[in-house]
Amino acid sequence: MLTTTVVPSGGRALISGLDVRHHPAEVKRQIGVVSQANTLDRALTVWENLYYHGRFFGVPRAQARARADELLEQFSLGERADAMVFQLSGGLAQRLMIARALVHEPQVLFLDEPTSGIDPQTRINLWRILGDLHRAGQTTLLTTHYMEEADVLCERIAIIDNGKALALGTPAELKRKHGADTVITVLVEGDPAELAEHAERLDGVRSVEREGSLVRVLATRSDGVLARLVETAAELGLPVRDAASLPPSLETVFLALTGREYRE
Amino acid sequence: MTGYGHTFLALLARDIRVLRRNFGQFLIRTIMQPLLFVFVFAYVFPKIGQGFHGGSAGISFSTVLVPGLIAVAINFQGIQAVALPLVQEFSVSKEIEDRVLAPVPVWMVGLEKIVAGAIQSLIAAGVVFPIVFLVHAHGAAPKVHIHDPLIFVFALLFACVLASALGLLIGTVLDPRKVTLLFAVVVLPLTFLGCVYYPWARLTPILWLKVLVLFNPLVYMTEGLRTSLTPELPHMPIWAFMLALVGGSAGLGLVSLRTFTRRVVT
Image (cartoon, rainbow over all chains, first blue to last red; front, top):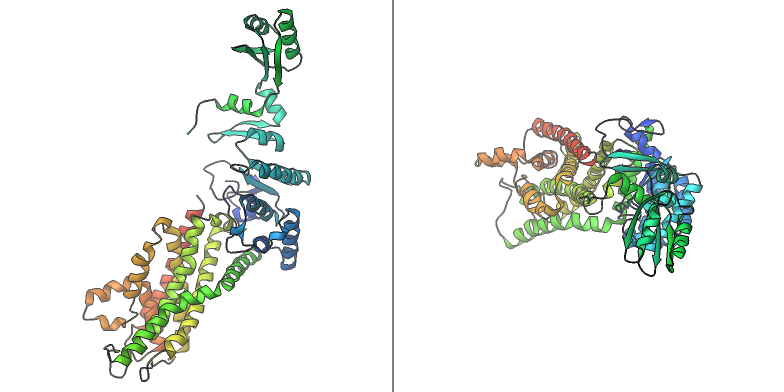
């Protein structure tokens, strides 16, 4: 809807003060879009993809040329300038898509699940690129299924489920507000039943699970709980094999908000 | 509006860039069919004395073929240059998703495709004309003269626009899995029943066919060119093909742009 290819059934959305429903052509001028599918122009070379994109957006010839050269350099695609697009690997094609979306210096850059189905190296490289853009002041709207990615890259996050925005805020706010728990695990030698009972009485502990010789504690606060558990184990004469504390994650926020049942 | 104009011209420049890159292919696919046709029917047949003549005294079959084969080239190019790439862009490559993000109303992206297709049709007509005019056996030369330049230009331009609009409509509605049927179901019937190899006026003995082919846009392209290039042959009244070419271009143009916009913006 924000990229004007789906007409909203209701409500109002503005981009740079322009209504997406009433001024789609003007809105398109303000945005750059990197869709999930590779939509590069297969009939053109890498360089031409950038050049003609600039021309579509009214960038004068000489400037479009310079901008194409500059972006190829910035995205380390310079060597492939004259290659046809279908010769590019997935990672390179995606980099070119991002470069293309930036040719006309959009107010807002849209990225639709940029890291779904790509290899770890490409993903890390992409995160680096997006981080650089962010630091350079580029407003970016990213959609993703990977909570880790949202946590790393985003300043503000909206969690949307079935077309409804369930929450909006910074990663830290969301975690605080929606009761994400710190997960503390203590592995002991022997029967941890007594340790678990003690754990339940600790301040800030929401629930305790047992699994063999492992105690898993979900705590609403992270400070001190792990230490108290280790101390208690020592008092009970249980040797501690391993102890760990996992900070709250967006994943748990997401699941808390949307439920755990499987979606089609 | 000038902003839109720039974008429109840039889209056109992109299509022309691609055409220039693939010009060899463009020539081959444009030339082969009419070249073989005139070779067999205007050279081989008269040479070996096999029947086929224009039906009127002193008029060779090659004369019938000149406007017909030019119209076929125009029509075929419209479909080939607009519909086939569009089917790909909608399905396999998804390129259309990017093209419609150009900062113009979506219908304008469609209009650009019609204009680009019409330009290719026009080039195809220019390429095919000397071939159908020059390839023939001794004594079987076509009789061609531009009787009224205004009607000729008019018929030629509107034939190109009509063919291209048809291409846009086909490209928008065609299911990519059925693309192989395009030739069997659309191109071949249009061509063989498009008054390419016979003037429309001669169909009187088969009245039902004479009426039926009026639904075929190629008939008006052929008859328009026939009237202006080979006026000795019987042809449709000028007002009739003028009306059909202009009305058809406008009507099919609007329908195809509407369908295109609806397919893109959901």
